Image (cartoon, rainbow, N blue to C red; front, side):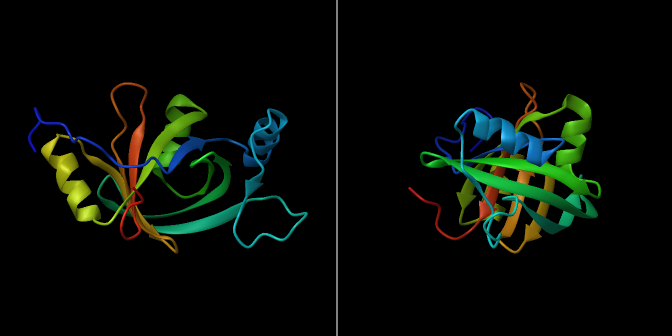
Length: 161
């Protein structure tokens, strides 16, 4: 694949990531519109549907560690992922500081992060951040020149069709 031959498909969209300043307020707002319910794995009923994840990885190619508070809601086959950067230097915090709350990334599964990194490189797109959490490794592309949207790939075996 060269710059003149774009990738034909990323497969099925898994989630849309939205960076927020206050995740509890964001959940309340979206639920007031009928979006939800929001969920978080391992959270007891009656508790806020949020969880904080610790990450280790790279930011702009340099070692980094950070924490993000997350909550998800199903929108048909796609998830709305709310993300509040809570600790450490991270792509989410950079985005929040630069452009405020809003769409941060669109997310897909892959069976090979190495392949996705190579495809980005061939297309002249850099890697903003990469990391690992309990759910597995992931990357975000550099933000797009239009809208500042990143593309996330999570390596989780065969991507859904």
